[in-house]
Image (cartoon, rainbow, N blue to C red; front, top):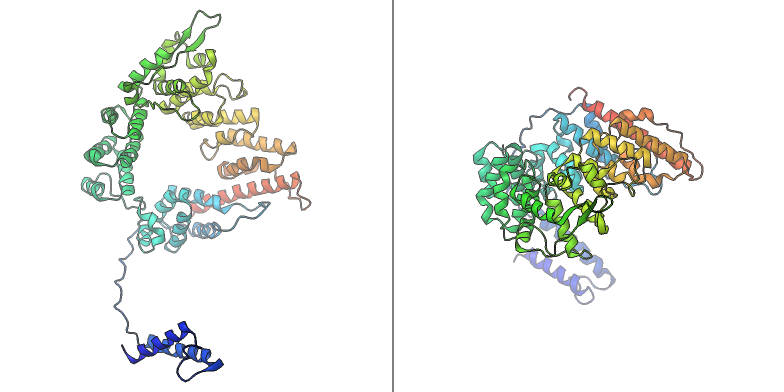
Length: 526
């Protein structure tokens, strides 16, 4: 130990024991503490000055080239503005008239992604911070960040999420068999999930074959995630693989395989489920009015369990109704018209159901229509949009209606929801609006604006419609701004009129900003 080290140890000992018990050399009394600090400062400077520089770290590899075009200058400035405003604390109380930049950033990223632009290098740190804070931003933000974003994420542990999903160009081309095989055998789980999805999207048979190469050795939770990827491009060609998965040792894997097979109306499992369901549901022609009668299963046998029927119901559900629902939702909808004398789906849904089985039966048909993407049955179960949900022939559940709407083409979906809003207002429309394609088609946009005008004129407070207002800001076409009357905000007391004025001004300002964002991205390249 050097003389300097010994002196430093003495100073440390004096500091720990106290200058009263171990005063520094040459100092006692009230001056001892300041003497100790002065000596420590001198020794610290001496120790630092004597340090020898360590070996230099290897410089990082150069950032990869991103061949995509650069943003137009106006769009680049807009991105900086959105990234700077995303972390602003929300205002307490009234929201004011300024657009919510937090909600506009996802739309901007989607528009930039559609046009194939690359992220400005200087914006990458803020972009990765935004994706770290909001998981819903990650797919678009990482795709926009591209290979340079992945390169930068390797240099900061806080951005390691960007390395897990294979985003930003990290996945090999699905057609490169050797690279695909290597990543599938050696990659992280999330990389393998992303890879399987990419291969499956390009060539469903190749994706299934890739999964089969390692299927027996995968963990149960991994098999479940991999099996779920077969939803994309699901076809009769997948039936053999899924039938084998019905014997899997994991209950969740068996249930998922059964669900996928039931989405194939021509599968052997669908036929088995149809045979079971048809024995439980029929038509009583002896009644004064033809009536649906239900005889739920009395047991859940081994064959039913193998085909994915869960034997134990959730808390609060009866066993027999639980089993019945699973059988009906897995049976092909095409089996019911013959069972009910050639009736159409609308006529079947309109039939009375004996013994209070209607809610259970209709809910199962709803799940079947969504699973099998059957638009005809979805229309029947939705009923007329003008009919009050509680009295119509179809489902009264808004959640089920939202799922049924997702099976219709976007134009029909928008027309149905527009008619629903026109008939019933906005109080029950939030879930239905959420499944409509963005930007909303003109009939739907007009119906929402008319309903907002009606609510304002009725004196309702706008926070009762805050969810719909937020959706309108994000989902209305920017062209809809011409339909909005935006009165000046009132500076007076916080009455309904002042709040509505602010809400409409914010809506108009947001639509205007979205229009400018689109125009900037369509401008000359930077």
